[in-house]
Image 1 (cartoon, rainbow, N blue to C red):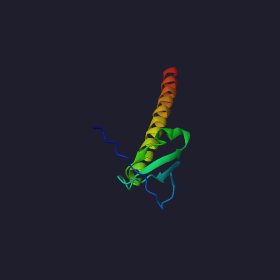
Image 2: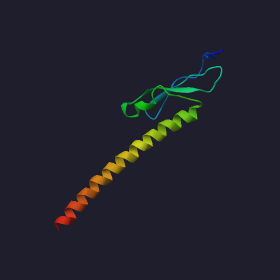
Image 3: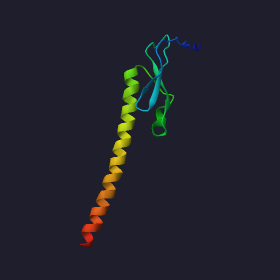
Image 4: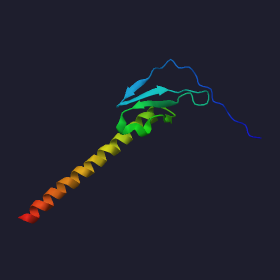
Length: 93
């Protein structure tokens, strides 16, 4: 017999907060009374939109990690460009 557990949402007095270009709102349920959901983000971190996390801290960490990874990727590209300039100018001399 397949039983489906329906997790009913709980009304919350907490409001939507903005954290590092992402809006996070409470998505509390009976089973997970501390759940939060990322509802709106900027285009560059759009992968997180709609994801739910057990605590507000977890949601904030996810936003921070994704933004850090984007910065690391930008730095890698910038270093490669700088190295290409150095290598081409030093080989001409």
